[in-house]
Amino acid sequence: MARSQGTFGKKENEKKRLKKRNDKADKKEERQANAKKGQSLEDMLAYVDENGNISATPPDPTKKKEINAEEIQINILRREDMEEEDAVRRGTVTFFNDSKGYGFIKDAQTQESIFVHANGLIDKITENDKVTFEVEMGHKGPTAVSVRIEKAPPVA
Image 1 (cartoon, rainbow, N blue to C red):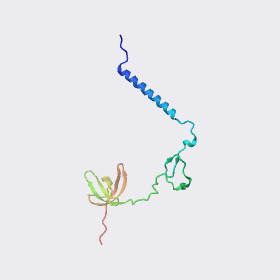
Image 2: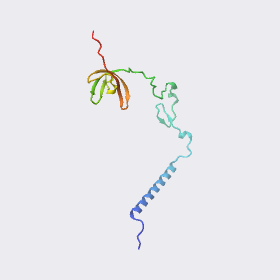
Image 3: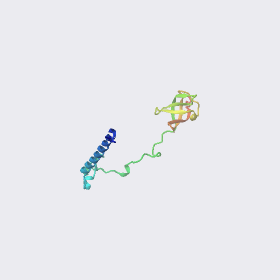
């Protein structure tokens, strides 16, 4: 007597495929049964209420607000429209490593720490020096350039 060619694993895989196919067919039939054919345009419309939420009921005309189209801003402000901040800033050198050629300056106005490289120096600086500088965007963030030691005002 000959054994069947199908092993247990092959039979199980075939059962899984058939079950998956039947489940898919059942889901398709359910979708078709629940599909609402012949809906009117009114049934398919959605409305936006005064708060910007989507609803099925039309908005109340008494709550209608008039909006001037020119007041709506869709884009960001242009560079010319933004107020120009003072290009020269003041700060204190919090850290500077002469051998590696970099350090950090703490901005006196914003208290943020700004990277400074030896290439951006005009005067030689050390820690705790009061300096003036300009800020440019480097590839890793703001970088101080044109760094000079702040001259103390003459004493009268």
